[in-house]
Amino acid sequence: MKPSMLALVLAAVLSPGAVLAAGEVNTKPLDPVLEKAQDATNHEDWAGAQAILKEALARTPNNPEYHNEYAYALRKGPKPDMSLVFQHYNEALRLDPKHRGANEYLGEAYLMIGNLPKAKEQLATLDKICFLPCKEYSELKASIAAYEAKGK
Image 1: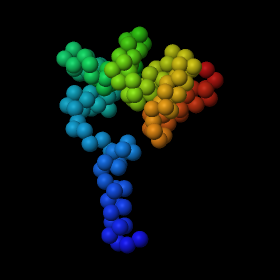
Image 2 (image 1 turned 45 degrees about the horizontal axis):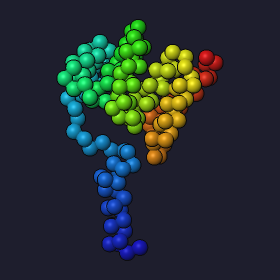
Image 3 (image 1 turned 30 degrees about the horizontal axis):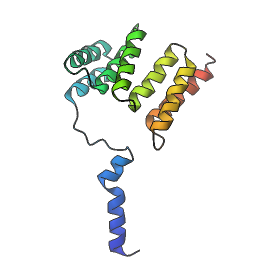
Image 4 (image 1 turned 180 degrees about the horizontal axis):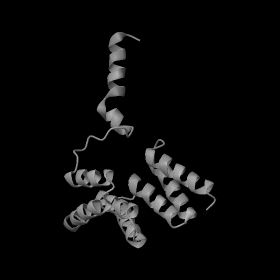
């Protein structure tokens, strides 16, 4: 292959658009609400993350990512209200049915209540959504395998 052709092929393969299409890089600007909530969850401050996201949802109720992250913070906190967790994951998916994170986390929530068949439904949904194997699919698959290994 000629050097100029090789450079053209490399540029096409390594371009940000190609990497983004593969799902490896997120070029969206960071959302300050999600940054604050992520900081709280990194410190396992579930109540803090919940407060940040609950306030954000009051202002922006149609944001699927806020619903997803709020449900996650609820689920990870002490004594989670699972009906509220499911309500917000389902709202995230109503707003964005292909939301990978909400599909993964909903599957994990089903495992928390012992509903393996519903968790496997979420895995099947992720299998359809992900063009290539994606992180969310792999993580839910591993969670299901761990759940099954415990013999529940």
